[in-house]
Image (tube, rainbow, N blue to C red):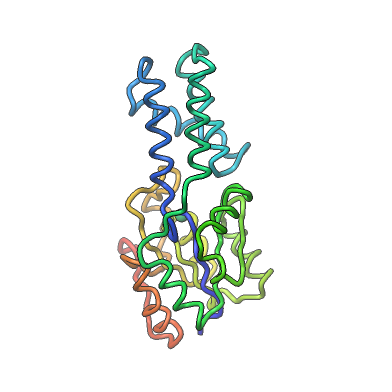
Length: 243
Ligand SMILES: [Mg+2]
């Protein structure tokens, strides 16, 4: 039996990565006199990776990394107006309407009738909470958790906090690194629904997968069927990559 079904939010319930891609296009345009777009992407990713321990995840962190990258790439020659252009792109991300993935709302509606639902999202508390409020699906969730990172310890703490045993906990998400592998390592049920765009930091090389078992679905609308099987303990997770 399953007690709680937890969902990642960005790129699991609603589209998120395309907003980052659009803002990166603005940055690439601003920096086009200095550098090719691909090189700008690489420089930005390097800055973001360095800044994660300082700022964590989210759009405000991303904005600071874009500005820092612009200063570095131009050797400090970037103009104030151009920095304002970059900041405007970040602000557009923060106020953008939330676009739910197809069938997400119907699936939540169906599952909320039989299970307690939780959303576990990482990033900026204000932005993630505001997106959930704008999404129109917040009322389906019994619990909302905005966390600074998604590690095994994060999930262990959340299970303890809500008194859920790992084997009766399902985590659904698009990121192997953040949503799937830490939960599988704790003995929880993990359901991977890949999104067509994935941030470099969220990709996982095969050696990190290490024989952990999880389920993979093409679409969130397949989830109620899988949950029924899990409630009856009939499903068997696939071992990924033959490992
Ligand atoms: Mg996600």
